[in-house]
Image (tube, rainbow, N blue to C red; front, side, top):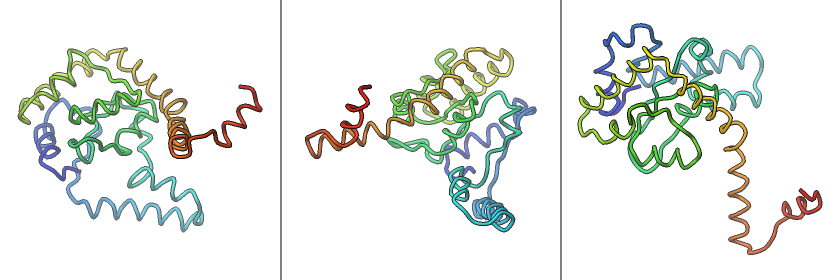
Length: 207
């Protein structure tokens, strides 16, 4: 949904570009209708199966369930976050394809990009794409750098891109999720200054 100049500029450049001829694209313009359709889908399922905790799970995807067909057929997903600037802004737009093992091209600024790398995620970076894309001052230059990178992905089908996607998939499901509990434990020790109940459990388990 191109709501800011950054996303509008990229959409305008690629909307009729031949490189997307064999791609699944969506250039929606009506934000209210977009979210209304998502709510309609949830209401349909609630009427059919009854209300329950599952509705929160579906809403966590944004405006509806992932497009499973897209994840089965596409080679990668180009991710334009809701905000590409500032110190931090990441949503399901990035984490959803990562959680499905899909290679991702993430179009954000250097600060956000470095933060997500600090979280342990990796990116396929042929020909220093990310540093050149982030350093470009105007949208026309950024778009041409991205177009060249997309042509490389489309023509060369790089194995390294899928190796990175596999790593991120494992990291998302098996490692990164534990960070929350580590941070809570560290916060407890800083605030209270002593061992907590979880520490004693692990002592008893002798792990």
